[in-house]
Amino acid sequence: VALTLHEPSLTADNLGMKTWVSSFVLSRRLHTILDAVPELVPSESTTSQCSQQKVRALELGSGTGLVGLSFAVLRGASASVHLTDLPAIVPNLSHNVDLNRSVLESSGAQVSTGVLDWSVVPDTEPTREERYDIILAADPLYSPEHPKWLVQTIARWLSTGLNARVVVEMPLREAYLPQVEEFRQRMTDIGLGIIEQGEEVAYDDWETATGDLIEVRCWWSVWGWSEKV
Image (cartoon, rainbow, N blue to C red; front, side, top):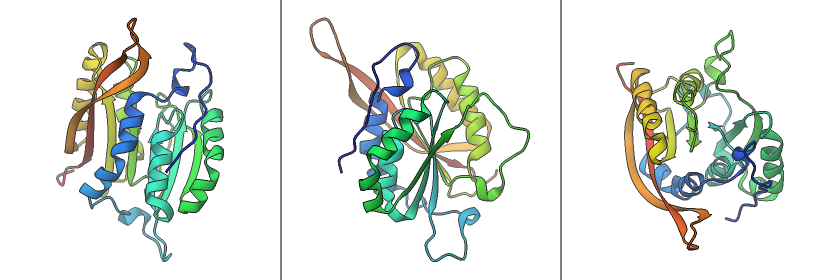
């Protein structure tokens, strides 16, 4: 499947409009994750009288939308996917959804976009029906506050069913290793545990002075609720 993405010129203010390496490798890995974890099915909270039950998926920090769009195409008519990011990034994200409208319609997937600021905690909790079966995130940590904000957002929007899943991929860059460890601890603290995980080596499309691509070690993981929660 070929997906088309628009990336505006990269500046310090729009790093979220670049497709980072972890998004690329997670998109390529999604089909193996879906095959390996058969519990990725609609939870009781999304089951209705309709004959067509859809898995509700939420992508956090979607950027250009590669991961969410890939998931939508892979799941086809069985998926309803909501791609989210900050206000400055969502217009380009929506544009990328439109660029891929034909392939999305061919697969039968439903895709929407919207603003979701992790630092803002609304006064009301989402209903059971508003929560998501699957939350996706790639390269979501790039400030000291992000582990706390990300995990509190996951806790808020993830279905409480035992078949709910969080799928993340993160580059293990030296400067951000403390944030990765904080993320792991906070996920454990709210009752989520790792079901599957692994590491892989990929290459960012930055070049060194010698013209070589920069090697990046990435960590992927699939999380689910403990039965004791």
